[in-house]
Structure formats: structure tokens, C-alpha cells
Image (cartoon, rainbow, N blue to C red; front, side, top):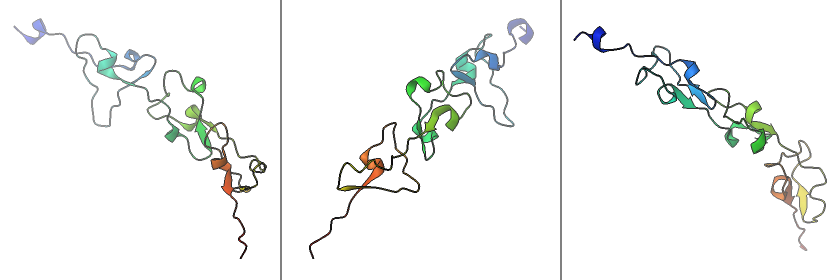
Amino acid sequence: CLEAECCQPAKSCTADVCGLGYLPKPVLPGETLDFCASTVCTTVDCCITTPRCRESDCGEGFILKGALSLPLYGCAGYDCTQDECCQVSPVCPPNFCEGNGSLLIKSTRPTPNCTSRVCSEGDCCNVADVCSSQ
């Protein structure tokens, strides 16, 4: 039997196969699109899961947004962006360490950024030196 009598042309992946939470598999320059495993293309053939936000997407002075503020179906592109994933971290109030006489604010210029939504002594304060009697 001839190829034309027995076979159908293989389909190539198209972006419309990928729904929410998926992106087309990247095709590097010089590569060709993957052929689908059957006459119908599926997300397994053509798509990858969209990346999710991670703390490493946030630079200094930023923290990961709360779960309800993160992109529901993953990031829009192949790499997550700071805008999608992060918010400006709070800064230590200048008087944060004043309630404890053994602590001093780490710095006032610039005021240290906190590592979460709520500032901690570790973010803001240093242990004050104690004068010796000698």
C-alpha cells in the first residue's frame, strides 16, 4: 500500500492547544515544531506548565505577594517577573527596637527592609554593645 493510502499527515503543535496554565513548548532557533502523537494534538504533545512565582523572583526590597495575589494559572511568560510575583517589602520603623533597651536599629539610612509582611527583630535590630566596668 502506498503511504497516501495508509497514512494521514501528522499534525504540528499550535499555540491554541495550550489552555490556561500552559504555554507552548519553546522552539529554539533552527528547531522545528514537534509533531503530535496522533491526528489530534494534546497539551502533552505541545505544551509545558506555566512557571509559578518563587521568592527568588523577588529582588532586594521585595517579598513574594500573598497567595491570593499571585497569578492563578501561573506566570504569563516562560519566566516570572517581579511585577507578577512580588510586592515592596515593608521597612523597619525607626522606633522598632526602642521597646527593648538591649537592641538598636540596624540602620536609619536606608532603613532595613523586612523579609516578610511583618518586621522582626532580626530584620531591624542589632544587639547593643554593653559597656564593661574596666
